[in-house]
Length: 302
Image (cartoon, rainbow, N blue to C red; front, side, top):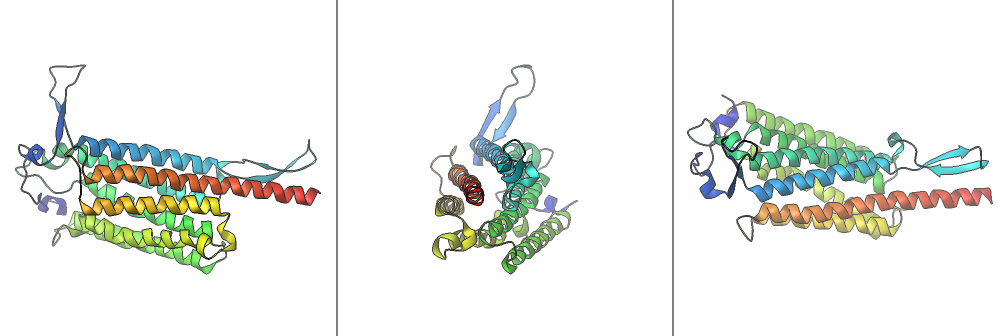
């Protein structure tokens, strides 16, 4: 038995009583009416998790497609700014894209954990367990998914030669190693309690990354860092990140408006908006860099 088998659901739920505590819907197989219905728990939470997964994948692709390369155009007889390949995208975008990709997988796993909870946590058991291996995957993907944007944001607002960029990289590596070790040990051994597999543990390890990104995002606006770029992209990025923080605070509050639109669903909805604004800020920075490069080329040619 793994550590997960010892962590029974705190409410003592069984497969028969699970849907009395969590909203469930039953889906009929339209291709085979005689087949057993599929029970989906917390359908709105599952849907919004998958929606966030799609958004994060789109943002990751857009960030990798946004790049500026100065190349020589033999027909024009001068340097021009071109798109180049995805490897030419700014390193900040590469870190952010990697983080978005991992977070997308994390939300996909989280949605599966919520939606198919009866099969993952209750099937074949006298009492449901608190977490499945899908939830373990969610946790292991989430922390590096937040640590990589810390490094990407450091590259966004600081010069690459800054010692603080190396500090951000060391922080990201350390927090991922420590968090992952705690989660894996708790999952494979008999844990003292379920804390290291709980969402409270996720919050404890996520808050430092969230605050570091917030501080870094403020630098271009309040301290006028020369590497911070123009104010429009910086303001968009900061506004979006603040919205993301508000969404996480709402999730922690546990306040819902309906059984089919609980605190998780509200968190996902607000977080969706915040991510869109953050992505717009990162893409706006690429556009501003392109215009700056074109202006510099014009100045050289004149």
